[in-house]
Length: 240
Image 1 (spheres, rainbow, N blue to C red):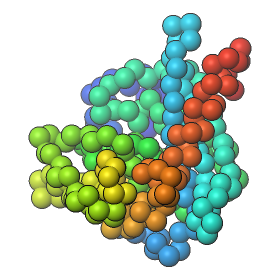
Image 2: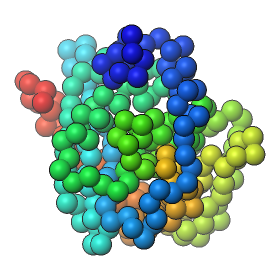
Image 3: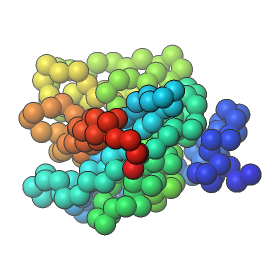
Image 4: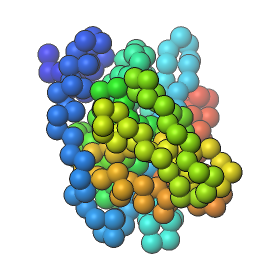
C-alpha cells in the first residue's frame, strides 16, 4: 500500500498516519521561497461538513484573492463522502482528498495558500496547511480561530492593539503566533505551513485582514463559500 497515495488514506491506521507525519515534518522548509512583495494572489481554503442518511459529507472551497484590490478572481469547490474517521491530530487525512481535487480545478494558481487551520502549530508539526503543501506544491500558512494546544504550552495574550502578537514556543522553537488583528477582538493563531517564514506569514495575515472581520479575507471568503455550498448540496439529491 502506498501510504502517500490519497486513494489509500481511508485504509490507514492511526499508527501509519503518525509515521507519515513524522516523515514529512523532516521536509518542512520554514523560509520564504517567494518574497512578500512578489505575492499577488492568495487562495483561501476551508471545508464544511454535514450528515445525510448516516453518511458524513464535506465540501471544500478555495477562493482566490487578488491582492492588488482584494477582490475574488476565482472560486472552486468539490464535495463528497468523508471516508476517513476523525482521529485527533490527523485531520489532514480526512480533508486532503477534497482539497487536492478542488485545487486541480483552479485555472488561477495562487502564489500562496491560506488554510483555515494550523500549519506547524501541531503536535507533530504537521497540521493541515503543512501536510497539504506536499500535495499542492506551494507555499502555505495556517490561520486558526481557536488555539490548538501543543503539549502544555500556553499562549500569552497579545496586547490589545491591532497588529500586536505573541510567539508560541515549544522546545525553543517558534511554532506559531497569537495575533491581534483588530483592537478589542480575540486573536487568531497563525503558523507557517511550508516554504514561508513566520514573519512573512504575520505580515501577510495583517495585510489581508479588512475592517469588517478579524479573520483575513482569503479564509473568511472561503468560510462563507463553504456555508453557501453546504446549504445547496444538503438539498441536492446528487453530490457534485
